[in-house]
Figure 1 (cartoon, rainbow, N blue to C red):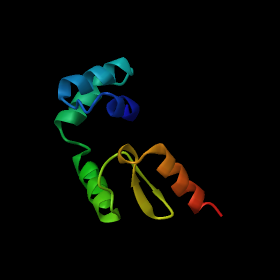
Figure 2: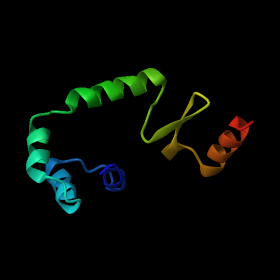
Figure 3: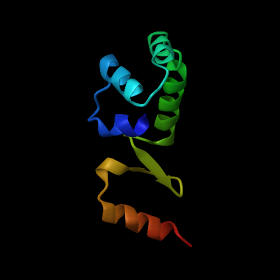
Length: 88
């Protein structure tokens, strides 16, 4: 699901989420129940807070030796350079 969400241009409305769930063969009744019941909302909020505390400003992001890198904002060469510098 996460790959679809990241490649779907940021469209996160309920209808599109349900389409993805159906196409992936998920249990759509459970998906709808958990979506409407906000079952995972606290976990998402905690992950967001954790990312902010860690210095993440956008997603997707990764850390190299503790330094955050926003993948969308960094040219590939800069990322390769950072990885090269981090290697022993």
